[in-house]
Length: 347
Ligand code: TXA
Ligand code: MG
Image (cartoon, rainbow, N blue to C red; front, side, top):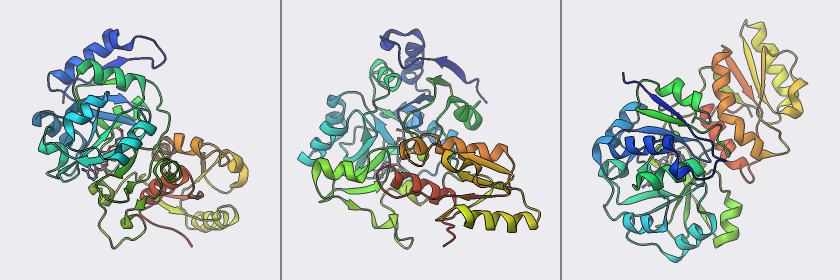
């Protein structure tokens, strides 16, 4: 156990690069420690990507399988060129359109980052976050920062500092509390070494936005076919799971009410995951939690992981969840929900 230092940084303050809290956190990174920090998607657990020791600490703190590579976070275009051998015109267009922002590009690695970061692959995943605290931290440390989501492996990704502390207090050197993150689901991971490029993980930038910018894109077949091995190693692991058994119920409403009634007869404590529009639609359930508004899928993404974590504190045995249209950010929402439910869908 170590003492986890806590710093605070308001993303709306000007001149964060001179903030003593950011400087102290950056100094920890320079000294080879690992610290958690907010990004616009979720909190990350960062360490110097060029050095093996901090990367080992990241895997250890998370309990992460070592074959699952990390995303390298950078703050300037020069840093991408230091890390990757080739930036093809499509990759360049994606960077110009969506960076800084919630898009991760898989590119050929120059071998500048530790093998521990890439899990021995010849490619490296790179992203330029837009969160002012993340940007100030990376600039101040003046290092490429490898950072997976700052949760224990298998848990929902953290969107608040308290989620990080719940999972990692005593296991990491520090955390910068920059308030709640915005997008709420992780970045979209796009493999730029294929033609057309391939979406390996749906996320904060939608398929439609990518197509608008560069034309055709492919989906990793593993996203819809369980018999295929995902190209992003992390996509094969159990993820986002609340403690209760969760089921997705297309149609929601009366179908969920029927299921709730059945579970109650069997003496189970039942939770329902819905949105503000339907909050009063499940009078039989023991716990009804809402994530945003169905009419605004961004608001659902924003609070999804916090709500999954809230169910743990409500001690329910089973959760029935509504489903969402797979358009825009709805694709990432359904991907995370379906993992949280370990694929259990009541059709
Ligand atoms: O929004 C995000 O992306 C957050 C914040 C902190 O930036 N980070 C994040 O990292 O979600 P993580 O480690 O939880 O997920 C990284 C994903 C994993 O599925 C991993 O397997 C995949 O990216 N990945 C990393 N490097 C890769 C590579 N070279 N080829 C294919 N997939 C890769
Ligand atoms: Mg993660």
